[in-house]
Image 1: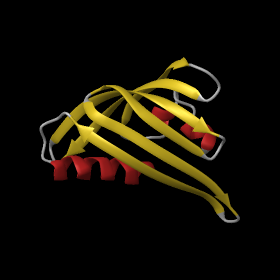
Image 2: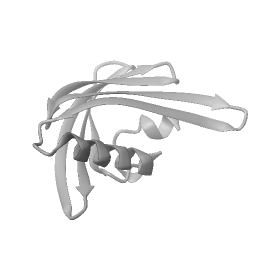
Image 3: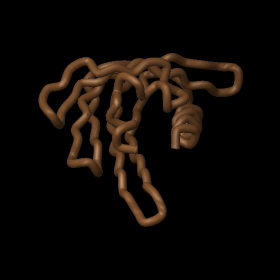
Image 4: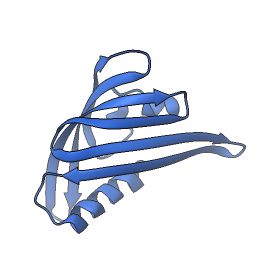
Length: 119
């Protein structure tokens, strides 16, 4: 799970809503600048969004991100990866505030559906 989450150039192969993902720059072994383009779909509508963020690796158990630029007012997230006797648990927490003028409940549904597909 860790290897997939941190392979930014191939992440779009595993995350259905991502159209593109690429590593822009590695600042050091634990801090990276990443850019992603995603497509959110709701009913017959779709919206393309771009985000650039800093990704911070905390050991091999946690990834946090902070917003740099893109189609959002705020975009922060946190991944927790925990190995258990029966497999791997992934937890994802995000605070996202879009610049799109869609109602909040629609944006929430789009993000939630994308994360359910991903996980």
